[in-house]
Structure formats: C-alpha cells, structure tokens
Amino acid sequence: MTRSRRVQTLAAALAAAAALTLTGCSGLEFRESICSDGYYPVQPVNSAGGDCRKDGEEPGEGNFRYPEGKVPQYVDDKWDVYWRSHSMDEHGNIIELDEEGNPVKKP
Image (cartoon, rainbow, N blue to C red; front, side, top):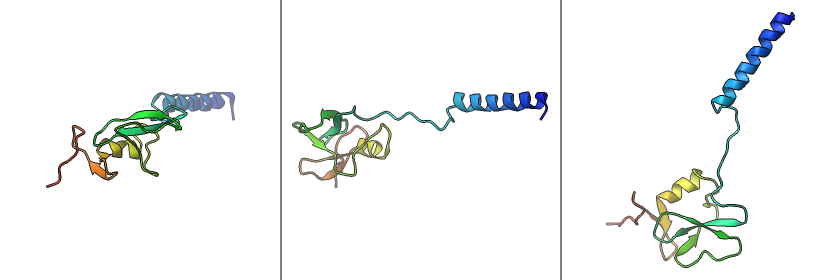
C-alpha cells in the first residue's frame, strides 16, 4: 500500500470513528440508576412516584417495596415505565393508574 493510500485509509477511519462518537452511535450507553448503591426503590401505595430507602430499612408508612422480578433498576427500563401507570393498593394488589397517577376506578 502506498503512503498516499495509507493516509487516505487512516483519514477515512478517523472520520468514521468521529462520526460514530459524535452521533451517539458508539455502542456505549449511559443508563441512570433509579437509586444509588446501598439503596432500593419504593413507591407510594395507590399512587405514582417513587423514592429510595437505605438497604436494610423498611419502606416506610404508605410505601411499598416492588414485587420480586418487577423492580425498576434504571430510568426508563421496562419496570420503570410499567410502574408509571401502575401501583399497589393497601392489600398488595397491583392496580392501574390514570394519567394523573390516581387509581383507575373499575366499573
């Protein structure tokens, strides 16, 4: 390969790498955790929203711990999105919420 061809190939590779990096297509993704290390997520009974409690502490009055296997880990993950429109009632039943975060009344 001639020097000119090597320079062209290197320039093309650098341009492609820069384009991938600048357009967010580098394959690396930042995911924001719901809670910091040492904390777990809770949600108010019959309502949307959420909070984090220190590991080992109880959820607190009026809050519930998410059911096993349905715990949101990252912002916008499957369970974070799900719990925006669902909650648990005071009996531990999963309920639907309306757009304002209030329980949907069943007819």
